[in-house]
Picture 1 (cartoon, rainbow, N blue to C red):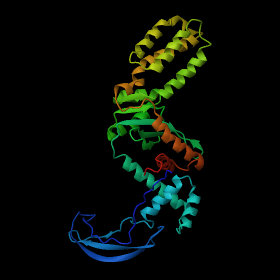
Picture 2: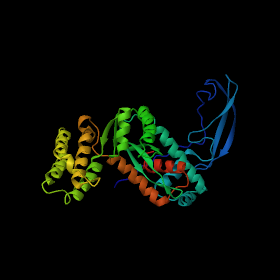
Picture 3: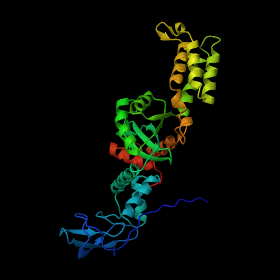
Picture 4: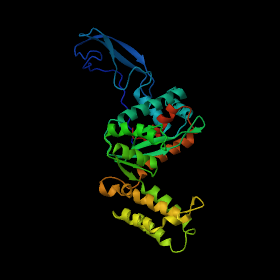
Length: 348
């Protein structure tokens, strides 16, 4: 029977070990300068002993907290435990009731602050690792009753969310301002995304390899083929069949073959009355596929690159499940924290 093991921070009543360095001057010689008993909020411990030390170098005093305790009234264990309750699907007030069962009285707003704190810690930790292949896609949660576009960046190596940004993915300039520093900081080599033109523009500008998700490509191509099959003149159905064959096989020469198909469709039959004819739409589709063929087959040239963006979609799916239960957010900061935490599952 499968089980989930959740590791919470240890909390000790007192710290017998002396500090190794002064937080102010980095000195290493100290004199004990008293102790104080502090009441804490925790599911097991109610009070801890905190020692105070005098630095012999700078003559300043400081507190040396036991493991799992800091300046806050709540222990690190309780702060993480309350955030886990929320991550498991409980509302803030139900988290409050669940904590009261184990003898902890905590307001629902304190639980929400704990959720945001854990999300910030998670974001800092994720930004320190190297990410070779980055998946990016958009999610649209409600903030104050209105939809907001949020981009989610996922490490497709381990499937974990890296960061969340308030960015309009249809705006190439806004996308570049958000993505370029992230690529440099994480050492990203390949971006995996859907087929929006803004991603193509930005990856070209910053010199980043780009893999377009095959699921998105085949979805819009198959939809166009179904709509155009009955409308195009007789004898041109073979073009649609060859387009489908190229996408199914994804051969290296597929781009050249599509370009040859594009040249076979005469330009004179493309427009009628200033609008594209069905055959003109086929011609436009074939040219688009031919021009971007290298982005559809990046996974064949570079090892370890997935051909779809399913890893990012799975993370967004977890976010969407939590979005439906909270019924919107009151602030953008709270939204970002909630998405970061819910998209990470319990991997924090």
